[in-house]
Image 1: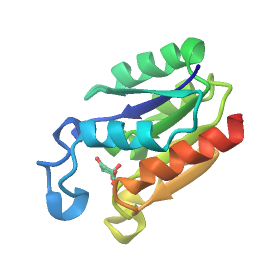
Image 2 (image 1 turned 180 degrees about the vertical axis):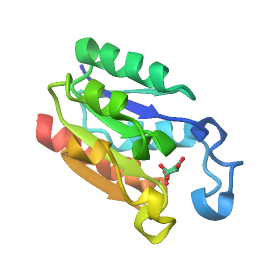
Image 3 (image 1 turned 90 degrees about the horizontal axis):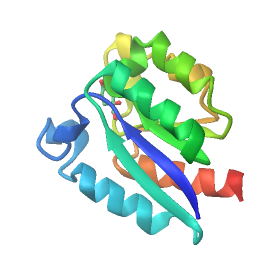
Image 4 (image 1 turned 45 degrees about the horizontal axis):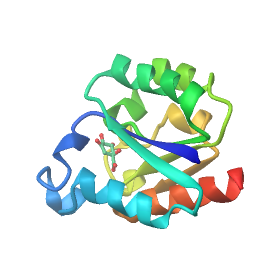
Length: 143
Ligand code: DQA
């Protein structure tokens, strides 16, 4: 069994309750269930969330040993964190960057992403379907 790490950053623990007009009403558990549903046979999903930059760095280090690919929604750290970019650069498999909202339609500080400098694909604005598309792509790339 190959494992895909689905990593979520700050405030995404409140998915479903937080600004539902922007992020929808589905919860992180719903996202995990969706990812599990769309993953090809032979792939497992491991979802983890941290509100801390270092927590995400630790999860990426763990993924180095345990994951064939990473789907990451780093939340606001997307736009600020060189540490998360550096951690992703130590990972050898495919990395997909996801955003629930269409970040390019929002404030200009959300238009820049450090993670995009490493990501093999960037998906934004599909709602929670962004995660499903990312998981499908990793299954395709890893084979
Ligand atoms: C987000 C977009 C980020 O700008 C924001 O800080 C988030 C969520 C998204 O999924 O649309 O926390 O990554």
